[in-house]
Length: 215
Image (cartoon, rainbow, N blue to C red; front, side, top):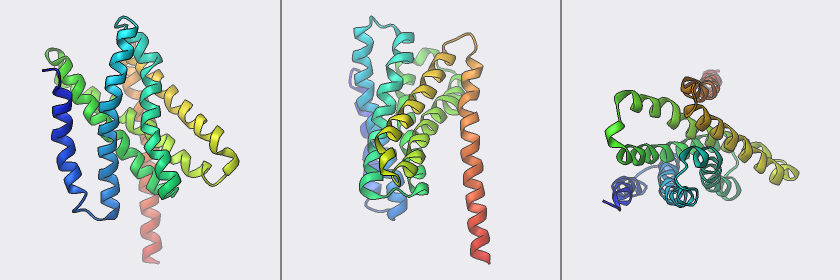
């Protein structure tokens, strides 16, 4: 079935889109950016397929050179719009960037699953969940969180934006290289090492917020 990716997208996007009319403001933003992440994944998967054909289906070359660039750039565009047109608040940007990466990772996992259904195992699912999915969320969070700093300093806007993109692209490319190397376990560890500081930051912020409310 050639259009199965679109069928899956519709099944996911329609209920998410309808829920936007029922949710409150903050929850609506998160769901909207999950939906945008799914949409970006569908679009860029078609682009990546064309790039793959141009390079004679050389998966290693394309996934380590091109897909980190195409995927991180497309994920960053909605974040740039949000920071510029809506808010450059640090926490809001972190929340929507994590949602963006999450939406992207969800559809990517499903697309890869249906493309190679015979090779899928529980271990594969755990690897995708704890490594690849986290990698997308973490890379997008780096860009989103960093934008909150550079938008307060106009001189840093252009060089800062490119620096954040290069950081996300580099982490993504390193992850893809490791996962296809003789040491894939290093690729599994990398997203967790980036994820843990974000968790610590979020828990610390909530704890401090509760303290302020009680005093």
